[in-house]
Image 1 (cartoon, rainbow, N blue to C red):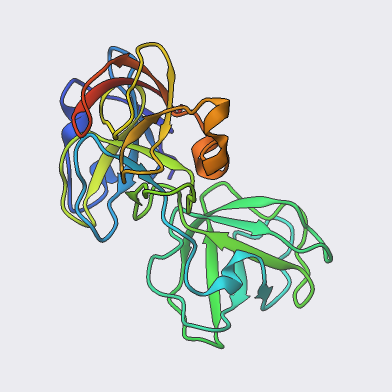
Image 2 (image 1 turned 120 degrees about the vertical axis):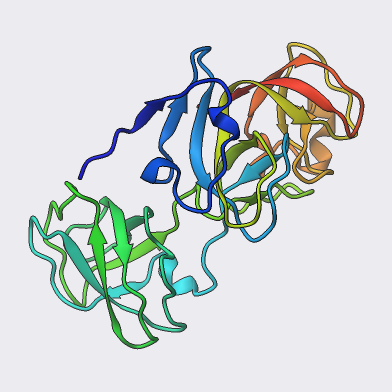
Length: 263
């Protein structure tokens, strides 16, 4: 069954939370309000969501083999709708990669350099074979060689989101700003574009200037640093990315108005 990639909501829909996927929509589905603000369907991680704070995607799974070294248990033919992998190291838990991605990551083998959308991956004990089902309509384009081509897997960037941290190191891409409080594991909408209330760190924001994820206050926005501030490395790594512009200025630990530009 195909789902729309964009839905259109009414004012207030962005504050809806649910214990299951909102409207049955896949994670990452965009919602647009009448004024043009854009939101992404997301799931909260293990810590409750705080309104006005900036969130990022979850870090890679503890079993680092999933980054690029997952062995194919069998050859996957052209037009195959699933791929069989061998789970090494720790077991693969339930629903970990649902709505996520599979990349043919190796430098050798056939069908390398492709990315596929994952529908689901079966829970599997270490050392056993898991069947990874691809999203409806996405099929293997070039045959994958069992025992030669290796793949990597990554959670959906909006699954189990967590607060940006008080440093210059990100664990994933920025997911968006919380529109309301929500319990751990709840399904929500995170804002990606347009005016939003943004938690302000201990820097002085300036109207019309760009902002980044703060390197000193978790979940906060900070002014993009000048060249003289480069000694702290804050213009590199995660904090090099501009996430919006200042519309109005509030004091430290208050909420400024930010025009988000993540989408």
